[in-house]
Length: 151
Image (cartoon, rainbow, N blue to C red; front, side, top):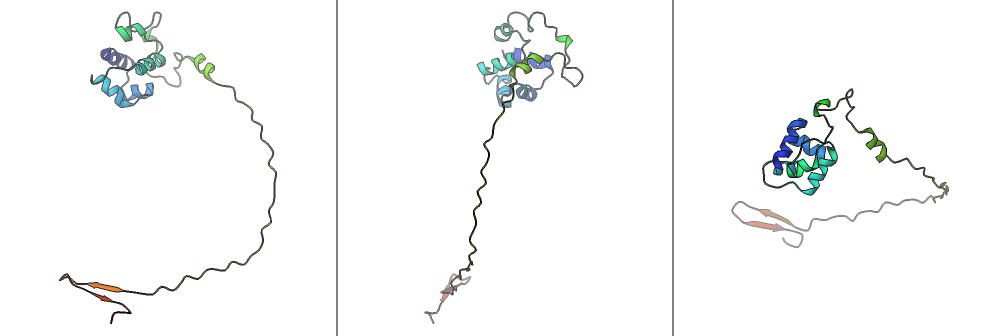
């Protein structure tokens, strides 16, 4: 299956990073599949078939049959969509998934006014700090302690 995924990427002209982004999977997942470290999970196969609905599921899973579904012409679509060539996109899929906007009613807000009282604010005084001890360290690993009670 790894080789078939590589073939899809070649035919779609997608490097591994863009392929992973298109499928909305972690790039490491695709890297591990391409390097043979991991086999594709059911989630990855489902995402490939969901995003690229023209890929033949039987071919992807077992390798039998054609790569593309019957009636699909791979040469009729461009390698990457642009503003002027988007005929291959399935517009009905987007219309079906879009939800109609719902109207939301809001309750009126009651304006309650609260009058505040004018109070004088008295700043609190911090207590005066006093030095209680000074320690001096010397480079010969000795020290002296100075303080009001040590003279």
